[in-house]
Image (cartoon, rainbow, N blue to C red):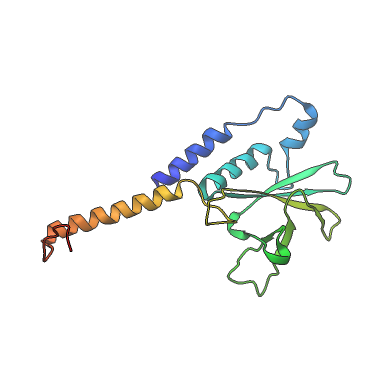
Amino acid sequence: PVHGGILKSKMRYTAGAGIKIQSEALKQQFEKVNNKNENLHDISKAFFSSRYAIGNCYIHIKTNKERNFFSLFLKDYTQARLGICEAKNYVIFHPDFKNTRNIEPVQVPIFPLFKETKDGYLESCYVVNDLVEGYLPYGLPDWLSGIDSAETNRAVNMWNKNSSKNGISSDYIFTGQF
């Protein structure tokens, strides 16, 4: 709960209390960025929440062929995978990757590439991730190594406490030489 509270506070500090837009043209676009009645501030809160929680964000972009409007949707990172091989420039979305038999995964090209959907719109996905050496291409949040270290230190500390309470001791004295 403490870690979750820290992440929520960090998200609130970054996203702020709202977005003030002076331009009327931009104001119209950003007061409603999709058909879920979300505004740019809603998307930014979800973005930073996802970014700080896991390090990966997927912003689904929809527009028309003329590109005179766009809609933004923050996709759940647990339902997204980066494609490989022939799907290399795509994000693959599926509501349940453990069970792909009933629902076909959806491939969306990674921005700046777009593809036409069945309903005639264009779509793309802007990908933001923390790239950590050895964990490509998904990335890991920068706090993960600290969590691992804290868990290891706690386990060692608990073992030491239990050992001293139970009287467990070594059968030999290590002198530093073999």
